[in-house]
Image (cartoon, rainbow, N blue to C red):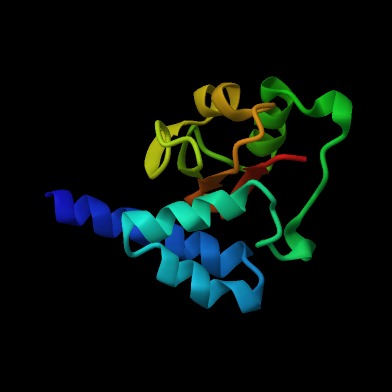
Length: 129
């Protein structure tokens, strides 16, 4: 069972890399997922946000940078209640979690995190800036 869960997690992570990462970053990112030590390197790069294709980045106005407004924005774009998380925050990394709860845990803390809603291929990135 544990191996199945691990493979499922990898599947979501590969989808995130394929859908949102810059072409020249995809191969290395996938390589870094295979071991815990290498994974930590990738997670450390998340906070800077320079892994992602610019065409997918939509800035959120400062006054809307709070968990409730981000939640409403994601829901308006079809996000479901449960999302998959990749994060520097090891308490939530690699887990499927409640969207509203995870937003309250990450927004404003500057830890590199991607929240991914598989069915709509919607994602939210929280980073340092």
